[in-house]
Amino acid sequence: NNAPIQSLLSQDAGFYNEMVAKVRVLTADFVFGESHVRMIATPVQDNEGHVIGSAIEMLNRTEEVSIENEIATIVNSAQQGDLSQRIEETGKTGFFFELATGLNALLSQVEDVFGAIANILSQMSNGNFKQQLEGNYHGAYQQIQRDMNDTVITLQQVVDQLRPSLLEIQESSGFIASTNDKLSEAAQRQAAGLEQIASTMEEIVSTVQNNADSADSVNDLTNKTAGIAKEGESVLNES
Image (cartoon, rainbow, N blue to C red; front, side, top):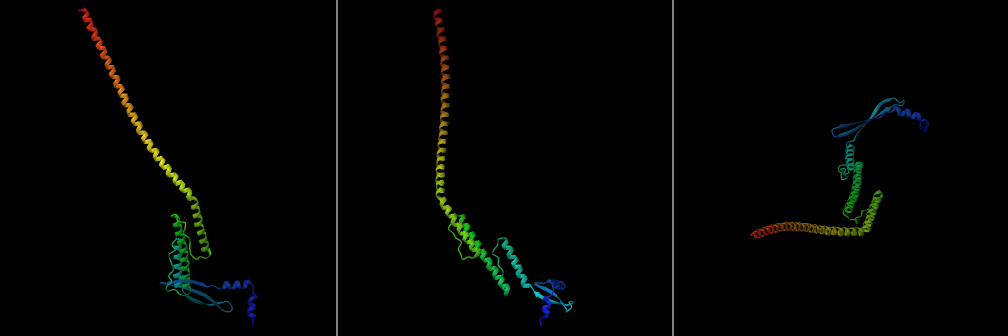
C-alpha cells in the first residue's frame, strides 16, 4: 500500500520545515587522555511527534584527529616552502591509509618538479642553458615542463646571438685598457721630462745670476784700478 508514501509526497514544503524544526541533533567532542570521542545525540519521537528519548552514538575519532593534525602540520610546512614533510603511513588502514599515501605521493611529485626547476635555474645562473626539465608529466605539470624547456631554448638562442657582440666588446675593452696604460706611461715620462727641464732652468738662472755678480765685481775692481793709476800719475807729475 503506497498510501503513506503518497501522503508524504502530497505535503507542502511547510510540513517538512516543521518536521525539521522539531528535530534537534546534538554533537559534542570529548578528549579522554589521548583518545578523542564524538557523541551524537538524536531525539527519538513517537507517531505524534513528541520526543520520547534520544539515540546516543559514540564515535572514536582518535585516528581521524591524529591524521587531521598531521595534515595541518604538513600544509603549514608547505606554505613555508618546506615540501619534505610526509604523513606517517605506518599503522594506518582503510581510508586513512589511502589518504596518507595519496597526499605523500602528491607532495613528492610537487617537490620533484620544484627541485628540478631550481636545478635548471641554478645551471642557468652559471651560464649553462642546456639543462632540460625531463620526466613524464601530465596536466599542469606537463605545461610547466613545456614552458620551462622553451624558455631555456629561447635564452640559449639569445645568448648565442649576443656572444659575437660580447666578444667584440671584450676585445675593445682590452684595447682601451691597454691604450690607457700607454697614455699613462707617456704622461708620466712627460712629467719627469718637465721636472728635469725645470731643474735645468733653475741651474741656468743660478749660473746667469752668478755671472752677473762676477761682472759687477770685475767692474768694481777695474774702477779701483783706474783710480789708483790716476793717483799714481798725479804723484809722478807733482814730482
